[in-house]
Image 1 (cartoon, rainbow, N blue to C red):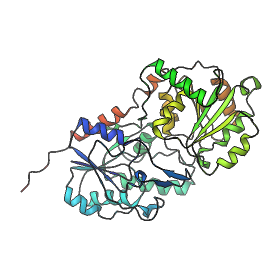
Image 2 (image 1 turned 135 degrees about the vertical axis):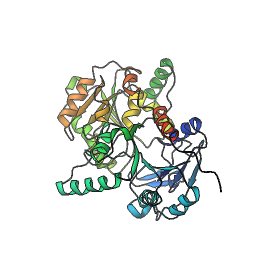
Image 3 (image 1 turned 90 degrees about the vertical axis):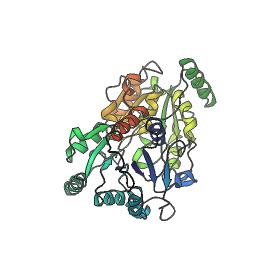
Length: 391
């Protein structure tokens, strides 16, 4: 039995565990620190209560420990390790998989497994280029990971920067396997159905057939730097700029300032607000290009890039986005420097010439699937020794 420790149900991870249950039924259980995200949990960065409409707890074995301390997850101690040692002693797993590494909950699971000599696997999104650090902070951080990873017997890496981080801190390549981040969004199966949904959504948004639609999808916060799109728009040549329409999907503390800035472009910018998972495919299909202008403030992956590519959107993202190394070879992908409106404007102009296609990105995404992630974990489960017979 493998125990997987997750802080809370997450919309892009649950499909992996649902598929894993189909591949290796009864071979694992997911242990959640809290299910607050399923119960109208307030998301500080969205600035509102968020309840995902995907079935995050269906189709696989799980247990919720209700270890939330306070109103929401925040600092290290907001999700406690209460009961974790007793759980490990009771379940006697053949291994544990620690998915995040951010709270007392998962740190306790890691430490207790090491104490009990239970093999530890990890699947974290940590990489070394997501944040700017002073040398001494970088050295302390590196020493921490070198020490912690000595107790890790296997690591699943989600992408290239994550793989490089693991190798840089002592985990050998033969002790790694690729279990990528992937989009679980359900898109229509055939081109005609996608085109129909694209047309209907564009009509709903008041868009014209020849409008060039830039989409921002995410939290309207400083880390995501959504204002860069508006700053760049002013630098785009007039013949392209007059066709541009910007759709902001999401909410957050920067929305009032963005709305004020958008007044400089009357009729060209609209704010759709928070859109739940089941509705997002329509917005990606309606768009021509996703823009993710994140700063170097911890954008370790950027799953919206996977989602947009699945819909065949072009993508503009900064080099601060973790997945930029994985997808930079894409024909309609542009990687720009962090916080460069000039480079963003050039990318907007460049991609305005692209022909909208729903399938150009399929080769780019072929390895980044829910199936690939589930198969990687399943293959490692197959290496576990059988449970000891009861005395």
